[in-house]
Length: 135
Image 1 (tube, rainbow, N blue to C red):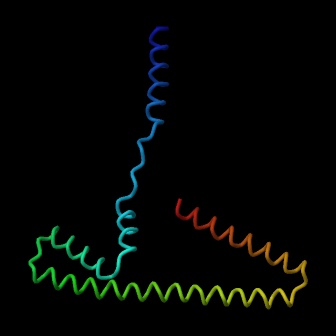
Image 2: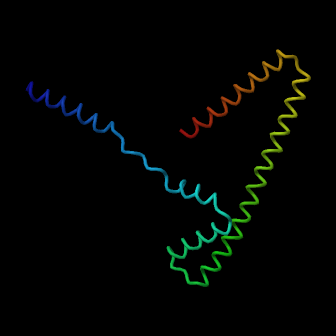
Image 3: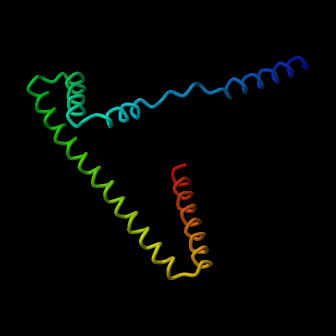
């Protein structure tokens, strides 16, 4: 009986240690490819996507040409949208900076410090709420 108990304890400890080891994490294939695609021109992205579809779907030469043109149009459109988003973010940041400067001129140093602290706490709560919703 004593041997059986010792054997069971040894097995439990060994099994626990074996399950605690995790396999090496592989990088996400999709993320790596997206990162590489972002560094290419719209023409290069369209060509790569068309070649990929042609290979995986067995497209004819005519279909591949049409898909390439469609992908090129979409790639150019998406570049324009991304550029506009960057521009809009910069405009929003400039507006926030102007607002903060004007607010700072209205408030006393203590009031502004308290405002900054409240804003920092609010941002931390927002980020914490997102993390809880995801996790």
